[in-house]
Image (tube, rainbow, N blue to C red; front, side, top):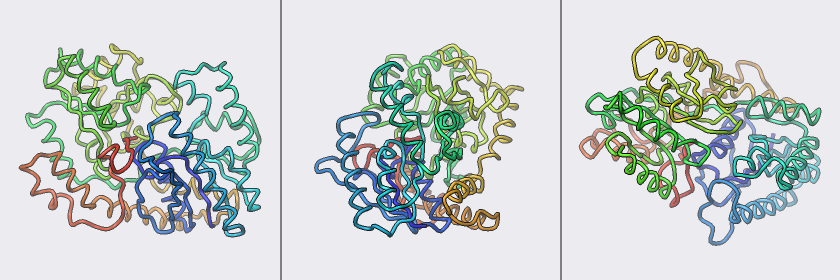
Length: 456
């Protein structure tokens, strides 16, 4: 099928929704569909056969912050106009309109212009997003957002929900078919030598390594994590907390907080990391942490965490418990004491740690690449999207793995790894990663220069 996809996000950049959009494109193109993706002017043109980027330019805009902003409002207007132009200019060309998040507002209009079905990719409940940024459920803006999203749901032909609570919300407001597809990691498996080099750089003396990967937005609970770390080092003075992600300004501010807590020797602020190196970074840790304080959408990092096989400490909130349980992780209250107790239970090599590792590995099998591709194919079968047999799905999954392997050898990853493991190890980077291959990759580094970038 020929797809007009609209995403009001900086695709590709390595944070939750842009990764989700890119992965959806990867799967659809691997299944044989062709996509014209209308998106922000901010982002990396990461190469995928069958994917064409159509960027809605706004003069002078080179970055966009996370969350609501006037700049984003301008960009969303530009995306709307460019999408309408594409739909009118190529009328009769497209077989489906596929919109993400707030682009769903005009998705049904685009679909009607072309006389084609509309697929709405629903990563969040709009009212939840507004509440995360401080608006109350009774605020007129919050209530209006909920009413508008109900209209989008009713006028769509299929909904892709990113987690079960979204699917439940759709079922309560309409009879539109809904398919739940979790946003798993589609990166290549890490090279053991790269993992070893990264771990040695972080903990040359054999220290315990805790790791958080993700954005540094307020709801992520990073202040709680730092406060709990101050508690943990009282009993585990050699423990090292590694934090991946965040814009340069956020990392700088976080560094000041680390200094004020007296944790300079125990915390490493890495900033952005190239996507292909994230699995190796996760594998290099002893414990992975997700201290998110609130929210319902399951963060992409959880699936990457599960895939690593490392034990997980996560706050006991809906964002996590839609996927994790007490068998696959250590669930704790979103508090300093709760996180500290959970982290300690996994730093010690006891039954809690062994159970969390076994549970995570067992759960990870539910979120493989074949499963993801199969669910995308099933959603598109609802609108006449073609085959869903196992052999066809397997070939599509293999194409995704091949692309991920090429990305893992990208020279930008090699350069970043050289800096990460230290100047002395830089000469060994090519040997660790292998020769540079082709295939565009959106790096996690350089937050506000090339593109706006966040870890998931």
